[in-house]
Length: 113
Length: 113
Image (cartoon, rainbow over all chains, first blue to last red; front, side, top):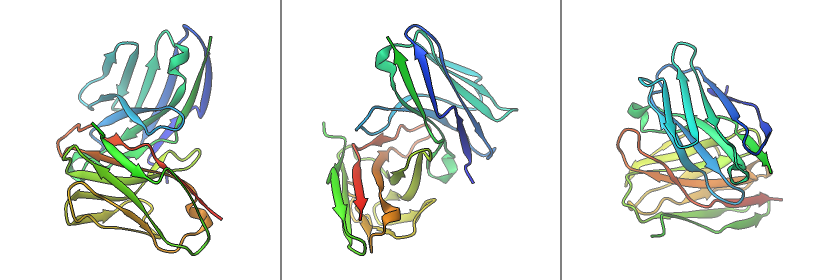
């Protein structure tokens, strides 16, 4: 039973386009929703994160949108660049449970020049 | 500044062999954890620790043991390797606080034949 479901599994976008990745969760106790970026051969690295009391967070070209009632959150990559080609993971955690991360299945993004 | 260091980077084991994956962090983080990454399944938590001498099971603990005798080190032991344990293993560490960023090592690619 996957507690965090991520879609799509992969996407191809042209340079300058918008990449959108969606995640849905089941456990309403989750209180922290980070996104991690992973390049081939490397470990995941934190990209951006949001708390459930905020509906949107923007850092540069990356934006998280959060819909608490629908139990969904998404990552938007604006003006996608070839250097953004990577695998992206959404995740969720519960502070009271030691901040253990529950990950989605990942989305492989390819930005074509 | 080394961060989280995992050794070895690659390992091939025969079914039934045992081995220890090493993980060390130099950031004085309280929390440490082990994940395995399999295609389409994201990262799944194997074991985690909230401090020296304290460990607990994650989502997929069977076949693995951990111990944490120091703040810096968190080794993962495979007791009797099975082909189903072929995966990429990541160690991560973080501070104890809410919204704490998890820092990942570069991973160990393990193949069990």
